[in-house]
Length: 251
Image (cartoon, rainbow, N blue to C red; front, side):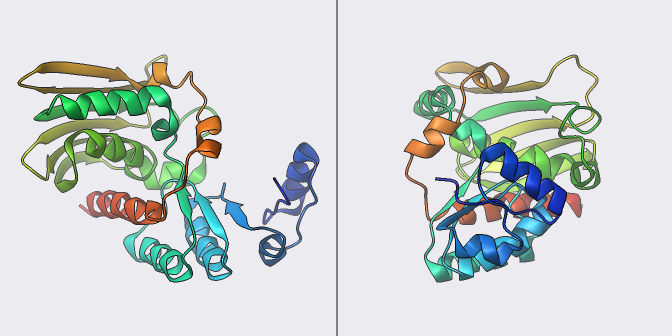
């Protein structure tokens, strides 16, 4: 049950309050006082600070990606959540879709040795996601968490990344996975294609499997979010994706 909303901007807070029919809170501490869990929809820099406060207050966390813009901030969120023993969820929305989970299971069973992922979007130049933090921090922090999550779901943990390009616009990556598998990744937030492309293909001795994440997005993730049991280690996984994105941004 939604118990309240808070935003740093009073006007926005009232708009959210009217939209959802719940009282606005005049401070983040006031929101914590009336909540058992907090769902975040703020820029990552603010999320990393507020999540530490929420965890310290014993509130469970539903977090957006990326967890933070840099590894030290992500580490502070993880430490706070683990110290408080709170439950966390990270909104990697593709993982909450049945079609995605079923495809990942089939892909793993095929024992793939390599994969190729393309996530090409114009989100940084048009539409509701063309905001300041995405333009400043780029594709590795915005699109990267989805890409790394699905690739690791197929090939296992990434142990090394080699990349080129402009991390705020378009990058090409080669990933080495634990166990010897490799993957190639193309990410762009400034694509001029008429619609977003998000595809993943894996191959091995038994053949090739392909997945279209855009087509799978027709399925809403929210019912599954409510049904599935959250994982206490979700922030630890989010910390790993932040570490990868941050390392490639720093070259």
